[in-house]
Image 1 (cartoon, rainbow, N blue to C red):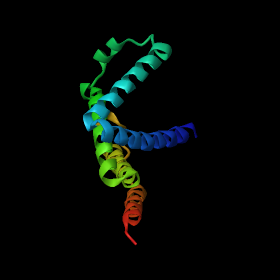
Image 2: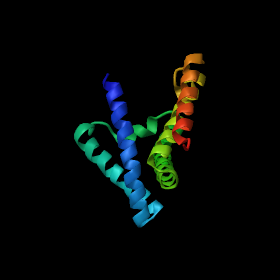
Image 3: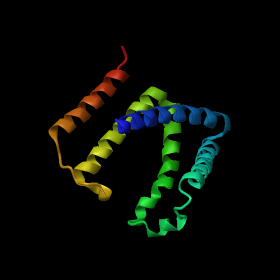
Image 4: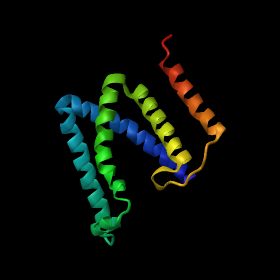
Length: 145
């Protein structure tokens, strides 16, 4: 149950953060806002590390394998940029639906094919039906009356 609660909080925080970041970018510029978001995130992570994980050395990052999994920060910058742009162009609700749809589809493909070291689950028709229904819901939400 705690996993569900954490996931719900994560989704809520992402939606609020996207709106905040879009507003900051309107007043300062997209890359200024993105840089500020990433920098304040870094400061927060360092502060939490200092109190919660100080025994873990940053040198342990040199042992991470495969090395491509270290690209999360670069992806984070891309995520910040694309969320700000999509909310600015589509609004928060449409952007969130499309973002979550893309997350769902890509995550399912990662599981089905066992990409990036994730345990391969194999194809399941019911999960595909769930994705199709989710996308249908997005189309209904977008439909103009």
